[in-house]
Image 1 (spheres, one colour):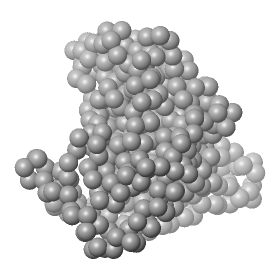
Image 2 (tube, helix red, strand yellow):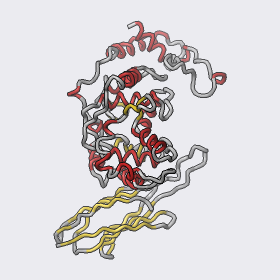
Image 3 (spheres, chains in turn yellow, green):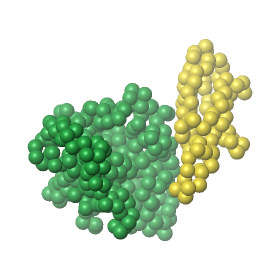
Image 4 (cartoon, one colour):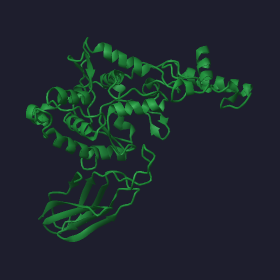
Length: 106
Length: 307
């Protein structure tokens, strides 16, 4: 499991615009580099990121090899109701990592 | 003036560096080529007149910066963070955006992981790092009595692993060693650098200073020429910082990973076309010691983000 850091405000007023920040450790190897043995280093990237808010998709990103290592993604959404934000990163091999954060909306 | 002209002439002819006794390029001595004939200098074959004019021009530049300024006055010292872009500074100060925090989290896990023949973790002896490791990184490098010489934080971690945990030393620049170092250094964030400069440490700090001020490599540059004399000016697209090593280990955007001060120093030496010292070499530790002493009293920022 890759290490991930997520920042979601613990509480917000209904209708507030909240900032969400995510950071995950990943080499994001482009596939264009040559290793010390002269062989190309195979491409290895996260290519998909989704955030759902109580099951509803609020943010979706497709990542390409030009994204630097340890992708940092920040975005805004509207606090509508108390519940769970789920973040999922999928790499090119299809492996998915999911992490969740709770938010209380008054 | 005369020596400066000779020096510049030497540079143009790409003479090997006198200090390190290094010859041409890499490889064994037999395979090295002779220096090119002066007529093949970058200024073109036989253009002696232009060569003299260029020499006078360049030596005038060297003379103008030739007399080395003294140390940076204490009140003019600035954190290396002042020389990076606002975006990079923001990334450093936001723990959710600073990618080195991923290494800090890995380090926290390792701190609590049992290792070695004793099957003990760092935490079994040192307890909560937030308390026991507070201010520790700000006091390294430090003199190790059992070795009779100073060691840096990475070497102290390995010393403790080998002697206390009876575990294997972690390789320099390994993910694990950097993670532990980042985790321990993080506990000193905001504290003043406080390395010891007593009589025992003095000779090593002085040796570090001598290396800092020594011209080296094919470019015949010293650390001090950039970081004491020309800080704040530009080298390529970047501002030259004062080399205050208060933020190590750093996340360097160019590296796309965390790295140690020794890696950074070796980087600069390669840039000067000098042969870098090996990881763990006493010369590098002396240089680290001098740099931390030079930054004494300044605020620790580990883990910092640099371009």
